[in-house]
Image (tube, rainbow over the protein chains, first blue to last red):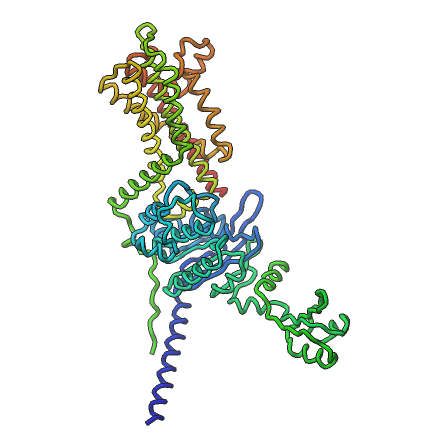
Length: 322
Length: 271
C-alpha cells in the first residue's frame, strides 16, 4: 500500500515540475513586453545609446545597471515615449510608446526635483488615478505604498522617504503591466526599502514587468531576475545575478599568514594578491585549492575568511574593462 | 501534455480608449487641482491678487473724486489694473509655474503618464482666467464701494469677457516664456518684461501723458490693445479702431503659440 502511495506522490511531483518547466518555457516564448532593437540615440555632441538591444518579458524584474552617463535614463525615457530614437525601434506592448493606449498600461517612478508641494497626497493620487481606465482603489494604493496617516498632508510637508513612497504610489495607481522604477529607494529608511522590495516581488508574481535602475547593487541583487549592465550606450553584460557575479576574477581569501606576497602570487590559480593592514587578500577562482596549499605551507595561518564575489566587484570589473 | 502558450495581451486597442465623459472628468480634475495648487501657494496668490488691489487702492480709490474731462479716474484705474492683474495671473501662473515644473521633471512624469496634454494646457489656461476674474471681482467691488464708481451689470459682464480673452492670450505668452526662460530666473525675467510692458501700454497712466516716443512704443504692445478693449467698455479708449486691437491681440497670440510650437518641436528632437 505505502509503495503505491509513494508512486503516486512521485508522479504528482514530477507532474508539478513538468508544469513549472512548461510555464517557464511558455513565458520565454511569450512576446516581450518591451523591446529596444538596435536603438541609437544621438545628441549634438554625444551618442547616448549605440545599437542597444533590450527585451523585457512578462513577470520579470530586470535591473539596468551602469555608471553615470551609461545611457540608463536615456533608455528609460525612450521606453516611456518621452524621446524618439535616432535609429532603431522601441516597442512597448507591440506598439509605439507614445500611443496613449500604451501609456495606460505603463507606470513610472522617476527621480524628480520637485513635485507640486501645495497639493495633498490624496489629491496627487486622485489626479493620477483618473488617467487610467482601471485604476486600483484609493485604499489599495495607500496600503501598497504605506501611506496610511499621511493622505491629507501636503506633499511639501513630507519627509524624503515619504515623498518617495508617494511617487511609488503614482507609478502603481493605474495597475500598470509595465513599471519603470528609477532609483526608487533613494532616501528611504530600511523598513520602507524592504517594504518596497516586497511590493516589487508581488508585482512580478502577478505577471507584471518591472524595469529597475539603481545604484544600490544590493537592491539589484535582491530583486532582479535578470541584470543588464550597460556602459557607453551598449549592453556590456546580461544575466542572472549569479551569472554576473560569476564573471569576476574569483573569490577572496583573507587571512593572516607569514607567507610573503611573491610566494602567494606564484600559487596556481591566484589572480591577485593585496595587503590590507595586517591581513592578506588573495583572489582565486578555485579558492579551496589555494587555501589547501596555503595551509600546507603555513601552519600558523589564522583569521581565515573566504568571501563570495559581491555584485559590486563584478559590476566594477565589467564597466572598467569596456 | 502540452499547454498552448498564453498569448500576452498586446494592444488590440479595444477597451483602452477613453470615453468622452472620462475625458471631461479628467479635464475637470486637472483644472480644479491646478487652481487649488496655485491658490494655496501663498507667494503666488497673495502677489498676483494683492498687487493690483494695492495699486488700485493707492492710485484709484485715492483719486475717487477726480475726473479728467469725462474720464472718471477711479473707473479708468479699475480698467487699467484689471488688465494689469490678469496679465500677471497669466504670466506668473503659467509662465513661472510651467518653467518650474519643467525644471523639476514633474512635467516629464505627467507626459509619460496617460494624461492628455491638452487637459494640462487647458487647466493652466482656465486657472489663469479664474485668477483674472477673481482680481476683477475684487477690484470692481472696491471701485463700487469705496471708489465712488458706478458700474452697470452689462459693463461688468463685458469686463469678464475681456478678462477671459486677455487671460487666454497672455497664457500663450506664458507658454513661450516657460520654454525659453530658465526656471531660476523666471520670476525676475517675467517681472522685467511685465512691469515695463504694463507701464508703457498706459495701464497705470493714460498714454497721452507720456512722451510721444514712448507712446509710439506703447501702441505696439499687446497689453495696449488689451487695455483699449477694456477701456472701450467705459468709453475711455483713445478712439483708435477696435478691429485694430482685436487683430493686434489675435496676431500676438498666434505668434506666441507658433514660436512655442517651433521650440517645443526642436527640443523634442534634441531631448
